[in-house]
Image 1 (cartoon, rainbow over the protein chains, first blue to last red):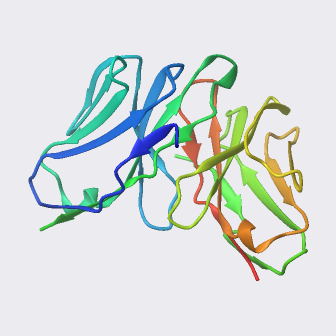
Image 2 (image 1 turned 120 degrees about the vertical axis):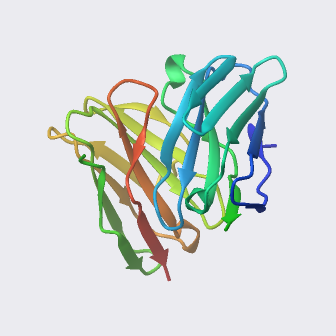
Length: 113
Length: 111
């Protein structure tokens, strides 16, 4: 079983919809939680990260972490066709494993006009 | 803004050959990470370097080796290539924080 599980989708939504992307993880040592966006044939691009539990908002994007249930979410408001990409959650245990990211499988998102 | 540079972008090798992938981190970044992403898979951590010293190691085969040089660029050397080594290889760089900035990747095809 993978340490980070993510529904691969694909997810298709109309422009303007609210998108919810989710991951679960099993290792309670994970301290940092990231969301990356990856366009086809490109490298992952860091969207945002949070430390421990809580919410973080950046423009149309909101990341949530619930460490008690080991659940990670990314919400995209007013989704745009340019948001169409693969979204990867990732975790980092910190400490001696700082920087060793563990990724979910990625969710393929399509926002159609 | 300057980004991570990887070369070559595409590489085709035959089985049992050797490949060298290069990574040039963002200026003033002292940490380099290497990931392997198979078709339809998530990136898998291979190895990382901080200030030219190996800092962590993941699921990197013994046939692979890597180093970081005095100018902070890094090279991933892959020998005795196998068909299963065909993948996208990403390099990411950072400066001590959580953020990792990924390069465009090198697509390695082993035939």
